Image (cartoon, rainbow, N blue to C red):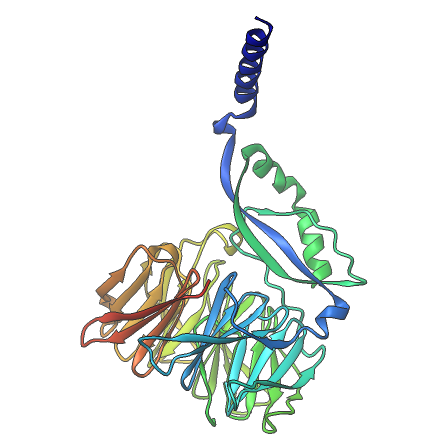
Length: 415
């Protein structure tokens, strides 16, 4: 009898705890950002070439000769042998703390490591060598995730530690906590203030690095950082050019740089490559945006929501036939676009979770949908001469061009 009574009490207590513990209406799923840090001593010796690793968070992609380089946000670069596009293979991982961008010329790879510029010799892809490190030549350009709902509280010892970036996860949190966080935003902003022509490869529209001739241009949120790379293994840090606010991407066509920012598109003349000069700008509502250019038009994707701003998401096509006075030609609604690219008359748009969208842009006033690859996550895209590269959520996709469409050739799981 005593055992039965204890059992009943135990069951009753479980029921009570269950009722008290969960009220699902008070909770929702939120995207949480957690800081990634490294000691200053470890940071200075953090570059290394190691065996392939599973990817943690895929970032931008870069194509050079028979190789594809996929950024693992804030951690380094995965090197992929793409000599057979139907069967690409990971061959190594370049470990670079705080890395988000690369650019390559004549077998020299330039990579950011927060405020430092790293130079690597990749002439022997199986024996990559570190040849130079320029310290404190870039702005500590830690990009705060634009679409998270919560930033984990953090106490960083800035005397001995460096903020590398952020890891994002989805968790269930109290709705009341989400609403109350806006009263604590001053703390978040305080933390942000404290952290503060040879053989050239091809990056996507999300790139912050761009090589033009003998110059490497690297944008941060306010400036164009300029390096003379005539001596490929010994870049010369030149005077930065202030370019505006919230700059996110860089694209080049001819003697002009096109900078995508959260406020608009800035155009700079580089006929004197060591000293870019402002030409004009196209303003839009606050939103995250990359830009690519073809002919008389610039194609800009705007992603609204959260820290990206209140602007609705869309594709803006800007008439730049008068480079001094760019004007909006037309806009098309999108769901949550990231990178985009152009190959001849085909326009490719990575519309986030809504998939890869392919258009015929012969008439910009009437884009014709050619295909929509749904049920995949899409981030960055590079149209090559014979194939299209696209990276989504830890997967590298390759497509072959058809007359009026594209067809999937291969996929490579990066995790």
